[in-house]
Length: 51
Image (cartoon, rainbow, N blue to C red; front, side, top):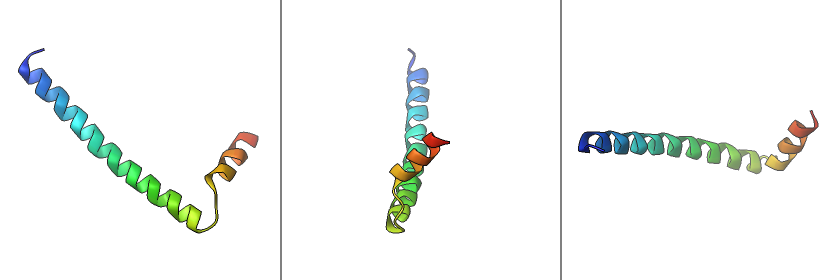
């Protein structure tokens, strides 16, 4: 690969990782809020599989 393609590839990988980190943070906040309110994610899994 040429150096320009390697730089472009690394930039894409970096930005995808930055975007995913934000999504993970939001998911963790939602999950902890559900746990604080007494809802377990396992209950939602069972309900969605039963439907």
